[in-house]
Length: 311
Image (cartoon, rainbow, N blue to C red; front, top):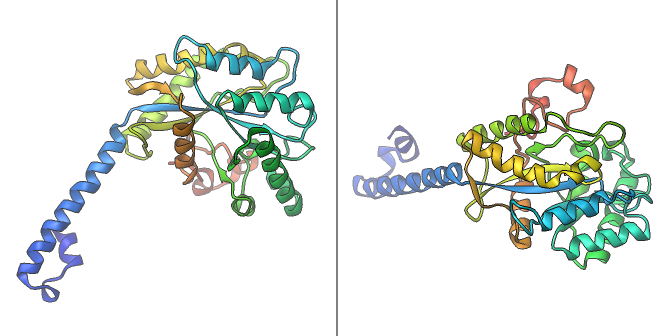
């Protein structure tokens, strides 16, 4: 009642009008609480994303991932988002790489921009403004030419961004999408086996459950999209993609995190809407420190800086 009195003081409104306003205030408050409650109660649907590809290695990691997304015992015909390197010769800057990108979007996945420079996986914060803008525009054009669509999402290499790169993304009509859960599989040389994969995902999912219960995450189409990141260039990830899908579902059940049916996106249009919902604000599940924070800032940065982009 105090909030209502502050908004509509006695001296400003006759008693009859105040009564009507009070009823309207009650209805609006109930509607707002209902929306927040619905968001908190919505089951989770995993939005799968893949970074750094396409991979042209002999073991064909990207092709393996595509095959297992299409055919797996958990949810057949899963659709994901592939953030690609369009210009590096070992990825999308060759005929074989361009063919693989085209196959990815033909299969119904979204292909979006990760890096558009021939120099490859270079953090945007280390690029000169002119080079960055040129790489964004050329990267978009390369994807649009191969996928007959409109590329409008981006994930910065190494998760690194600042106010200047955000402004560049805006100028290029690109929305930045980060992640709630990372498989931590970005290391692709030497030892790539993940011995803690199940324990790791349970810990990540527990954080998701906490944020969901607190009503900090949005929902759409009756589900709460949770962004999960893998690297399709990682041979171990590629060989075990179906197992990772099972782990996500099994560990969610183990901690009581309700999942939508299906638990992964299988519709391209729904995937697109969910991705843009999450890209619309800088709010992701984090374990204390955002992925985008560089090492030195992790050591010396303040709490607000460390949690930029965290819910």
